[in-house]
Length: 314
View 1 (cartoon, rainbow, N blue to C red):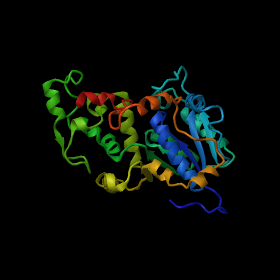
View 2: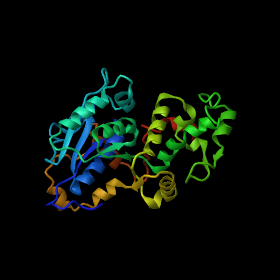
View 3: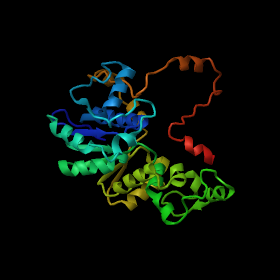
View 4: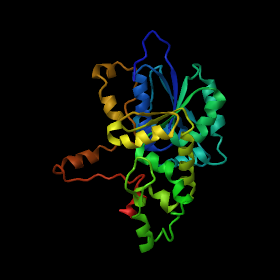
């Protein structure tokens, strides 16, 4: 990624994450990297998530430089502020006025945007908005290429009659045998089993969230640029498969934190911004004290936020 010369007018990029904590965190890191390279950034959150940031880091935590600004869009009525805040509820309910909110916000900006970088799960909304605004849109997938490919291919499980499983809620011997079957038709993913796919692909293939993700993945093939949070040496076969499947450009950018760590300390200190974190939840340093009291390699950490349903297939 090249740096914009200081005497050149800065491109203005709108960043729009999916409304989930990990998705926002990853998108923020990408925005920070783009900003460091000389781009003007406007980062859009829902009002609830913006409030959670301020509660987590303090009232001035998101005070950015003149070239890194945070803006908000109203949430759905009756949304509940919690760590389990549903991005699907915020962005995809039929009655949502997201598109109008987004268009009004973007057109009100004093500096017209050059491009939208949207979370891939937001594609159904942002591609439509970009067309109305007549500006380019890129999709960013803050997940591994393998997860993205599984979402992209999941509808074929239904078309081939593999799912829905009979009695999937009980996981009978028959359904367990089905989950062990190897699939040979997913590009770049040799010898993957059904149980290795995201659980929603086989446990609830016609559910609202499964349909939402599958539709978003399909739209991505029609967008000119897709960015995946991975790196070529890790998932080269899948990245190559996407490049051959799509007529669009497919880029890898990651791991983002390692790229941010390469920014010289003195340059970080010159940034005119108080933004210094990514968590929507207030930090609890007491757990680090507890961790420090344990022997090395004696503690295992597991995050269950997005993978808890997969425990049934382990």
